[in-house]
Length: 122
Image (cartoon, rainbow, N blue to C red):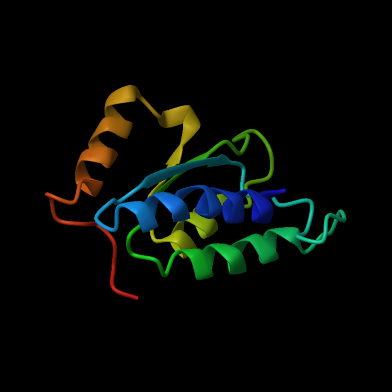
């Protein structure tokens, strides 16, 4: 359940942000971007659209940085929904097939608060 996972991630970091307002968590979402269960717990063909709506709401919180790792199988139909979710969250989307350890290190370095943030104003 993609939407529920996004919400749960924020529920996990919320107490940390209350405890330390200067904290800037980096959340890494590993997904193919295809939602299949809606927030009400039922299988739903609109679950992906729901996940993008949830991501759009969560992406407004500039204290959070997101990186999406796209696991969509390149041999199948490419829907690029993980990229849509990354855009909604305001973070980069990296294809797992192309990912090397130094790629992720570079992304994290760019997201470090002491560097210029790649996030765009919303």
